[in-house]
Length: 229
Ligand SMILES: [Zn+2]
Image (cartoon, rainbow, N blue to C red):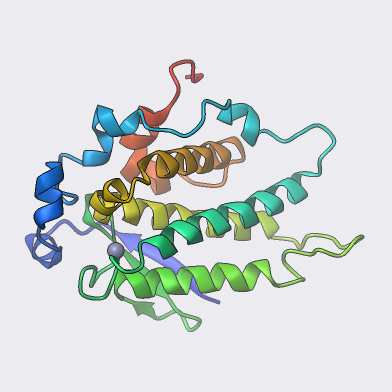
């Protein structure tokens, strides 16, 4: 079973490994890897595809089993995040992203089955992540689908691990591929998915504050005006 760890890495050397801005980013007036964080610009933050009450959408519906609710949402979020990841695969390569970076140039390091830390390219890291999640979701002992089956002890811990990987996937997209998101017209969809996922995690205590901190500025910017403090 794989794992995941991260550590902050803000050295100059890391900045030099990042892709330089190209023509499209200059045309759009943004650069993904500058501190200005283009995804925080008002013109992009306001882009969403729905005005649905996402807080209500994330709450456990009356009469629904909590584990079932977590399981079905985990499957759905995985499919959506995987779809975004796939849409960007031609832009996220070992050449453009030799290291798996998140906001603040945090580096994501994969831990293999033997506890070895593997510093790998972003596409490889997220390949490991998606394969790991896919294996969990199709494991009948972890995500049972048959009537009468019970969820295992430690189920919530595994769900938390899945959401951490999904969050990091979106974090990498915001940090390293935002100009492609804009060019592809996916900003509104990404903001909506990200907001739904972070609200869901907040509602069900699936991510630690230190996990979401690198994108807390964006989470706050995307909160609706009437969001409870
Ligand atoms: Zn990438």
